[in-house]
Image (cartoon, rainbow, N blue to C red; front, side, top):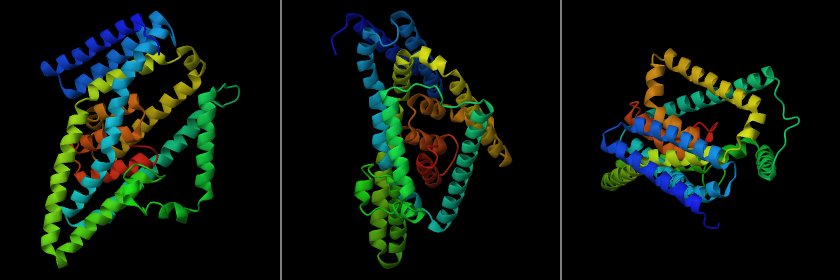
Length: 345
């Protein structure tokens, strides 16, 4: 991309905004407050850029080639720690306690995920039907057509496999390959392998207690190192959110979005209804929904701005453990399964 002087000025302003986020930490603003402010600043800055320079202008494209480096790098860092986090957390959660309740936990998690995913699908159908929305008359660009073809291909491949085969694919023939994130069920395969390894370590106590103790100590040490890495990456969240929102807002074609106003409104209605559904579920189990949403705000904001379940997973797990009091084993199991089932990660 050719050098653009105006774009360089935009980058300098963006760097100043990054510094302002850093300064907020020095004056002891809370983490959630900094994330919220970063999101608002990114929205305003991106909107101002588009108002001044217009959609798809050279200065904005040049600036975003560098601004996007911050946001994309942060999302990649999050994805980098997903598999190690899932693996060490599930293994250590099992070896630290009796695994007798593992099956019960997994059943409850699966039940909640499947029920809420079914409810969300039903709400989607009801909202679009009640608003009379169809795809008739909509125009699609090359990217949308390619994405549609890819999804249709994946759907055909998925439907061609019987349920038995789909379940079998969760068992990895090469766990190290699954740990690279490859395969249709990579996350679930890592969960399965970690659970099996943890159970094997528990059984080892009966025949070779010394080896079991050494393995336990090693995994706990590895868990501590990985969790420190997670903390290091999560501290970058405000900067990543600022970059992501700036890029999204400055490159969004609002005239095209307005043409899809009905779909946008339907989408947000459905999302609000799902928030209500989750709030009712928590109320039934005597949890305060407002407390949950307040403590989960950083998690929700990043999911909104990154649009990545896998990228949001480390924040999801950290939020469950640190803010909501969920034990690490349940948090990792629920988050990992949710990343694949209904994309609720």
